[in-house]
Each structure stands twice: as C-alpha cells, then as structure tokens.
Length: 441
Image 1 (cartoon, rainbow, N blue to C red):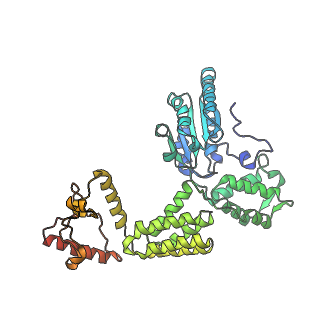
Image 2: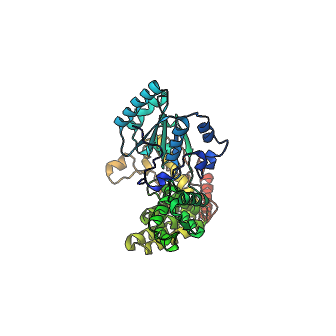
Image 3: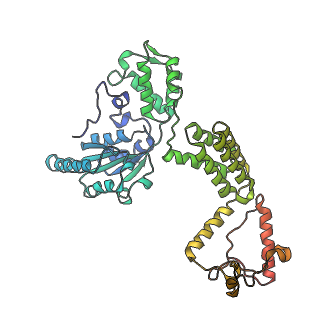
C-alpha cells in the first residue's frame, strides 16, 4: 500500500511533521519553484513527467515528489533503493495498472537513493515508464549522469536542487517553533535570533538537520526559552557536510586542484582545510597533490614534485597534525609555483600514439646487442653514442620506430625552468636542420 504522504503522528520526527504541504510552504529552490519556472508550471498544470531530483540531503527531494502526488491526485509509492528490489517494483507496477484501470488515476513511483539501484533494477521499471504505466521520480545525492542508465536518464528530466540558504533555514526553524499543530508551538518557547542563526549555520544547507537540531533543543529545554547553553552544546562538534564518496567529495578536491592550478594559494588552503575538517583522509589528499605537481607544474618547477612527495612521506610517517601541515606547505608551494601542463599534454599525446600505432618494432640500431648473434643480425649497428658527439647530441638521429612519423610531444612553456628547456630544445632542432634532419610534427 502507498504510504501516507504527510504523517501527523506525535512520534514522527519533527522534520517529517513539518514537511511542506503546499508550494507556498517551501523555502528555497526558487530557481525551480518561483512563479513561471518550469517545475512549478508542470506541478500547477498537472503535467507530470518522469524526473530526477539531484541535490544534497535535506534540500526537498522527497517533499517535491510528495507534492507532485498531492497536486495531481496520483497514487504515491515510495521505495528505498537500499531496501527494495525488483520484486517490489513489479508489485508497484501491478498496483499502478489496477489504479489506472479501476480509478483512472496515475501512479508516481518514487525511488529514494536511486543511484544505489543496479542496471538490472533500473531496467525492471524502464519499460513501464516508457509505456506510461507510471511516472518515475528518482532522488539522488550523486551525479545521475554517472549513476543512472542512459536509457532511463534520457526519459527523465533532471532538476538540480541547491543547499538551502541561512535565511531559508532560519525561516524553517522559526515556523516550526511557532507551529502548535505540527511543531512545539503550544509550549510558546522563545529562541534568540542569534541562537537561531547559529542553528541555521550548523545545519549546512540541510533543512532536516536544522529541524533535528531544533527538536533536540526543545527536548533539552525545561524553561520558556531555548538558551544559548543548549544551542552551544548541540552544535559543538557538528560535522561539516562532506560526503567521502559522493559529489561533494569530488567537488571539493576539484576546487582544491583548480585553486592550485589557478595560482590562488589562499583559496587552495581553504579547500584543503575544508576537506581535512570534513574528515577526508589526508593521504588521499597527499596523493592528489603529487598529481597536481606533475600535471600543472611539471618541469616549470621540478622541486614541486619533490616537495609533494615529501609531504606525503611526512603524513605517512607522523600522521596528523604534523602531516597535514606538511601537505599545507606543499599546497601553498604548488599554488605559487610557475605553471606548465606541457608534461601532462606530452604524456597524453604519446600514450595516444602508442595505442594508435600498435606494436611497432624497435629500430635495429636502437636494440640491445649483448650476444654475437645479435650483432651479426645488425642489432645496435650504426648506433652513435651521444656522449662522443659534439654538444653531446647526435644531430639528425631518429629514435622513433619505422612507421611512426617523428613527433614533438613536449612543448615547454615560457615559464619557470621550462624557459631554459625550451631554449635547449630549440638549439637541438637547429642542429637537426643543419644536417638535414626531419622536423618533428
């Protein structure tokens, strides 16, 4: 049987009791729900379509799904992708057919944490979405383009929900505090605006967390005012919003990497602090910092890679907090260092050629010749020892295999040490041209 859309049981958590029951009660998400916005128009006009709500916890994904059912009069079936399987979906499809035939109503199949459904589970309800037997609504904190089948994603519109602002959360707290029916309004408790602000900030954009904090504060209050001591005790040690495996995780490491690449040391330090404060493994960060040193600095400042490796070593040897300080030192150095992605681009180009041209043979003059037979076969014949040549360079020599044109993968930039490397390579190309050597592509 479909669940009650808006339960009022006293034992129900405050966050569920205060769930908005009309569009007007929703705080936040104005980019989707303001007058004239596509999602609001679809709800008000009862033009249901399959959709995916993607956003952090406590931003209204489940609430919006329930409101769609309320406004449309559709049957509502909610499943958790953690607890439900193909059998449950088939039962919901059968019920949807019955409701359509006997009651002339549609059915909304709402799947929470839909990213946890595997391909076969997603395929189980896809034909029924295509046939119009039911409307699919999925909720996910993960990027749907990575987690959902392309066939399903192509039949559903993705709506991105944003973390709620501080003012939105303050309104939610105040409304709940003064609601005598669904909230604790009958107790006529007061909450100083400063303390309300602190609770809203501690919720980190999550309405459910804000209401949970309020409920705990109410339960811990014996007087007619929720005191500063109660609020301080509740919000002390509140974990920052940091998903160690999801989009928030990758967004923050991306912000750190881009800040280093953009030579913004203060911003890089902030994102490093956010990740460490949120519980990210410092060794993971250290590995990523090593990647930054090669990808974005390379030979413009080779000391960056050494410093990044040293920071990783310090973290492994000493742990926190000493290791975190060493990582911070490396991050600041990398952010301030000369930048070059020439090594990164050269490596990618070489890998592409290696895959494209296959197993080309090593030219005979470059082969090793430790035996008499190998020498008789011509291995190492005509090889010229670079150290015995003028300027230590064999002008005009080709070190590529036959069948692969000479390449110029590495193009040093005019920054940092690569200025000197660029000059050196330009001189070697002059020597090649002087003896009629081929230019590199």
